[in-house]
Amino acid sequence: MNALEIAEHTKIDHLIGMSHMNIGICYEELKDYEKAAIHLKFSIKVFEKSEHSFLTKALFALTHVYAKKDNIDLALKYFMKGKGEAENKNDKEYIEKFKILEGLYFSHGEYELINEAFSYLADRKMFADMENFATEIGDYFYQTGELKLSNEFYRMSIEARRKIKRGEIINENQPNSIGSNGVE
Image 1 (spheres, one colour):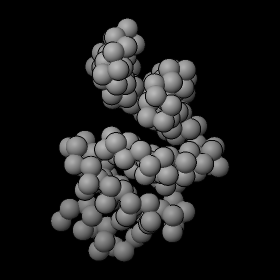
Image 2 (image 1 turned 45 degrees about the vertical axis):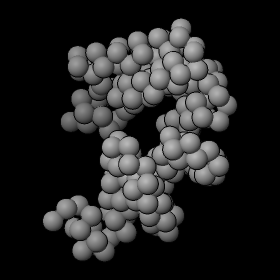
Image 3 (image 1 turned 60 degrees about the vertical axis):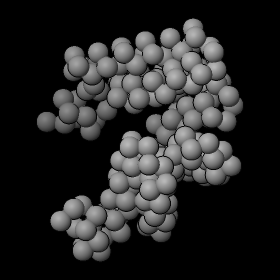
């Protein structure tokens, strides 16, 4: 049985929502944006109904999917909803991640928004996120002919990968991180 079948069998809403969200994120990685959107929308419905904390993450992922598909109207709709949700819940991580989407897709490469968000990610040693976003942003600036910025973000991606390989991904400032002072 796969995770979605198990979740559906247990009839536990948040597990069903999480399964759909994870499937949607996997389809996004495979660049199958249609299937990604279907699963992410389903997860959003479940998370809204149960008021689950992953609602912000699912809204972010769906915004990103629609932006990648160049469906800016739908992306903007989910961006506004997700950004508002992050702000209402004071979810600092997603407030910053929505800045990346805003800078990249809704304000045409607003460097300062992106830079602020990267500063937050770096402070929290979120190198996997930095690597993924930096590559995407590097591609964006390359396509717009801003080669200096493109190179800066490609280099940032490479450096994030190095830090991951060296094991610097553990964040001692977050109590739930492995190896932190709050976890034994």
